[in-house]
Length: 395
Ligand SMILES: Cc1cc2nc3c(=O)[nH]c(=O)nc-3n(C[C@H](O)[C@H](O)[C@H](O)COP(=O)(O)OP(=O)(O)OC[C@H]3O[C@@H](n4cnc5c(N)ncnc54)[C@H](O)[C@@H]3O)c2cc1C
Ligand code: SF4
Ligand code: SF4
Ligand code: SF4
Image (tube, rainbow, N blue to C red; front, side, top):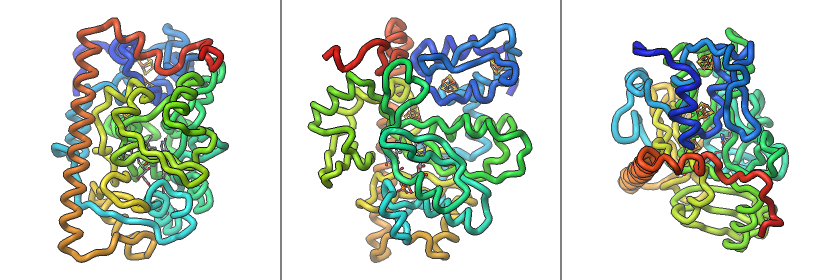
């Protein structure tokens, strides 16, 4: 790829951040070529900005690796063999962990935790980048190097976005995992697996296409399906809780399949249609096109599987091999049934994934159209659910 003109963070500001498309993954700041001399920083609003513009080398890396730009699209598609409509895949399964302790804490069937556990215990990786629960509403990225640490990181819930403390609490399902990869020294002799949403996996794949260190330490990616991440400030939190008659502090588990599923303390389960939940989606998510995590080695979600099972798309040859080995070594088990029925279920689930992928692409096209033709919307989108100074007293 040859760049016709110099690209810098100014382009990212103009094309992504000011248009309300930044999903605050932290990739540009973490992998800025001038990060050691402090060209960029994360602002108080959680969005990237210049710390010192004079230090920018105008190398364009921040722009190229941003998951919300598409300048590297062809290179990434070619390198990872993308095929329409949901990327390359070898097979599809409905599976679950064989370990009861994993099943107890998993979001769906605990396949993610089991696969990572298999790879760690068989010395195929040295660690896995996952997000660990640190409190009722907090999560942080860690590199798990043991089975216990993987179990502590299983499942999903709302997290408090710590960098926004000054602006009041925000609860979100998005956990930035990219910055922790940057903390590894270049050439660290590690072999890591990463679990991430499509935007996170895309940023990593772009770094790998550009051979940016230390992205070479990531040898395996498990991609979560993702229709959207959610963000709530105090005001939205109160409104949401009242509308759906739930106590947010009592949430045991959050899950997204055909709809948004909230499991409460009391074993009560609340189902909310995805269209209804879009009011608490992070605005950047509404312009994001990748649902099925098209570039991961293995993609997973709850969509299409019965409760307690994970839907698994094995994508690359390595992904298929790891899955088969974990199956043979009894870390996971496929859903049982007669082979004809399983084959019908497989094609039904594939159609469902393709339909969700199409739905997400259409939603993004609509949103991008609005942003291009109604530019006055951009500042509103960038504001996200966070409004400084707004709190429960405003109700
Ligand atoms: C923000 C988000 C949106 C999702 N949207 C959908 C959807 O629309 N449709 C669908 O079918 N499935 C969706 N999923 C995936 C689904 O919820 C399950 O994570 C997936 O089925 C794996 O289940 P499991 O039981 O095998 O995973 P587990 O064994 O429970 O492991 C889950 C892994 O995900 C990691 N993790 C949890 N939260 C995050 C996060 N925010 N960022 C990065 N890693 C995280 C954990 O650390 C853990 O390693 C989404 C997941 C997330 C986090
Ligand atoms: S030095 Fe490169 S990566 Fe950093 S802000 Fe400037 S253009 Fe972006
Ligand atoms: S989406 Fe990520 S890489 Fe792109 S501007 Fe926002 S923080 Fe930077
Ligand atoms: S929808 Fe999911 S993949 Fe897309 S930006 Fe939001 S969190 Fe990332």
